[in-house]
Structures are given as C-alpha cells and as structure tokens.
Image (cartoon, rainbow, N blue to C red; front, side):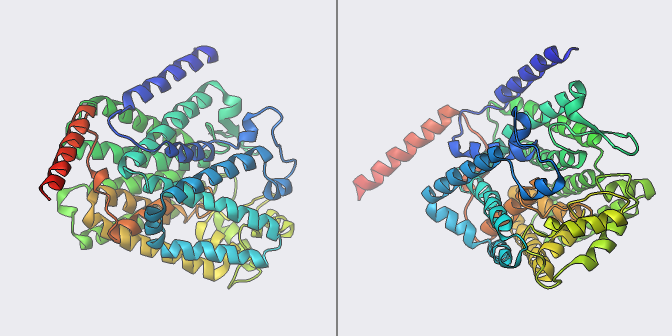
Length: 477
C-alpha cells in the first residue's frame, strides 16, 4: 500500500472510530477539548516540529534553556483558557484543590526553589508551565459528568495518537522510526521523539481504555450504543497493545502489566471493601514488577534501565550523578540541575560520550532538582495518594481500581525512568489519580458519573418527571 492510500485508509479508520464511539445522550463540557489538545501535543512532538520553519535548537544547551515560541504561545493559551474555565466552576474546583494538600505543598516548594536556581528566569517560566498539568486534570474532574469526561478524554486522545503512530511507524520511517547511532538498531517512535516516550503515552492511555472496557462490561445498564462503543474501545485497546510491543520500552510494558493486573483483580467481587487484600496484592505486584525490571536478565535490564540500550547500565549514571548534587537538602532548583554544562560534560565522560539531560530515575531526578525535601514530598504524594485511592476504592470500586493502578504503576515506572517531571504523561495521570482519590475519599460525590450512558429519550423523560415532581412539591407547599 502506498503512503497516500494509507493516509486515506487511516483517516477513514479514525473517522470510523469517532463515529462508533459517539454518544449523543451525554453532555460533557466543550472545555474538555483543552486537555485533549494538551495530551495530543504531550503525546507527540512539539508543534514547531510539525510546522515549516519551526524552532530547531542547534545544541542541547539551547534545547534546555529555550522553548519554541509556537509551543510557548500554544501552552500559554491553553493555560489561560483553562484557568478561565476553572474560575467559572469555582466551588467544585476548591473542593478538589483542598483535598490535594500534598500536591499543593509540592508545587509550592517547587516555586520556592526557583529562588536558589542558577537560572531563575528559566525555572520560573517552567514552573508556570507546570501549572498547566494541574489545570487540565481539574477540568476533567470538575466536569458535570466526570466519568463521561474521562472516558471521552481517553477516546479522543487515543483515536488520534494510536492510528497516526502506527501510520508513521509503517509508512513514514523517516518520522516514525529512529536508529541508534552506535549499533544501528532500529527503534519505533511513532508520533513521538523516542521509543520510551511512545511507550509511556501508550501505556497510560491503554490503561484508561482497559478501564473503560471493564466499566462498560460491568455495567447493569444496557444503552443502545453499548456494542459499537465496545467495538471502538476494543480496537483502541488492540492498537495500544501493538504499539507497546513495537515500542519495546520494557519499563512501560511492565508498568502497564502492573496497572492492568491491579485493575483486573480489583474488579473481582471478593476484593471490594477488603483493604488488606488490596494491600497484599499491591505489595506482591510491586515486588514482582521491580524484580522483572532490575533482575530480569542482563539484556532486558540494560534495556529497561535506559532509553539508549548501548549504555553500560544506569547504575553508572546514578553513581556519577549523586555526588554532583550541589545541595543535598534543597536541591539545585526546579528544572535547573541539567542547565549546568559542567554536570553534563562530567556525565558524558563517565558514560562514554553520551550527552544526557535526565537521570533515568524519577526519584533521583527529584533529588537532583529539589533535594531530600523534594524526595520527601514526592513520597508523601505517593503514600497519601495510595492511601486515599484505597479509601476511594471502598466507596467507588469503578473509580478506585483505575486510581490505584495509576499510582502504583507510577511508583514502579519511576524506578528506571524520570517520570516525576512537568508535562510528562505519567506525571499528568499520577496527578489526576491523586487529586481524584483525595476528592472521593473526602466525600466529593461523583454519583452522576456512576450511571452509564442512557438514551437521549430516557434522559428527556427523566427530566420531565423531575420537573413535574418539583412543580408538585411546590404546589403542595
């Protein structure tokens, strides 16, 4: 098949998935398109890469300190529009924000750390951008129908990213594939810039698609669009599994398997309202997943411990980086450690000439940027988020299973990849899980999201009955 015919075929497939997945009986806010656009860009490449004459950093120093004006304008516009939406939703936003104390504390400390950063202007600008992660998840959580909004977020994002990544991998090798400069090994990147980024965006979205499928199958309601929605979600799930396989990112595959396993087991009836069983299951799976990553054989371990499989191992990177921390207690400052050229040059000598800009370990990355204080706050977010997700699972198993899966899989993912970073897909969905867990466990009612889609006719009928009943109450009063 020629690329032009493939373009047409994939375009028709995308349109077909949107048609199969449509549901006119539910009403989510138009503002939901803001987080969808946000994830489309996070899950692909900077906008400047897609536009003729876009920003092209000439060196890693420029890449670390400068951002494309096109992308800056895009994210600034999304942030302003998102804040406007949240202001309109006032009270409900404050409820979720108030239930997310550790997250607010972490972001506050990140802002404070700008003061001792070597480049306060760069750190401050990036802190402002990091607020976009919180804004986008709050738009979803404060929707009138949060479950429907979350389902549409997964579908709208995956329907675009998954097929186009497959198209690029197969028919546009110059864009969808990359080759290791030392070994010549082929790597599939899809719409993203490297195989691990393709792996992580696929893992977080496929986990959401699986949650959507299980939610539909467990539902007692039988909406007339149930079968075609299942077909669309099944196609997305199959595409996600395919991309996980060809991306060959061991960390993402293990994290997905861990999250999916948790979701499937917690969906069993005997697990509900049994916190001890959930804790035992989590401990067992975390131990197994960590062993699989770190002790799963030399070749697999090297592949899992870094994006570039030609490196001798991430233990060399970690051992070299730890003594370079300028302030073990407070850190180098938010998003500023890698701005130091001397750090990168010393690391390049230790790793055989590789010019790296991340630690390939989320906990070490936080330590370098924010010191032990930052690591403590991340641990607080994870522990508090996990505790609240289990409490949310008792109240609402449908939501709770997804939230536990994201929080626990993020813990494991960050053992060998730096995922606690702004505008990283796993960080965005971790924040979502923590905020949602805090809200549900604090008593924020999401019952409206518990009811699956019903037909438009039944919706109108219910509204009529409620109106008549209300009039009757007022008349009798």
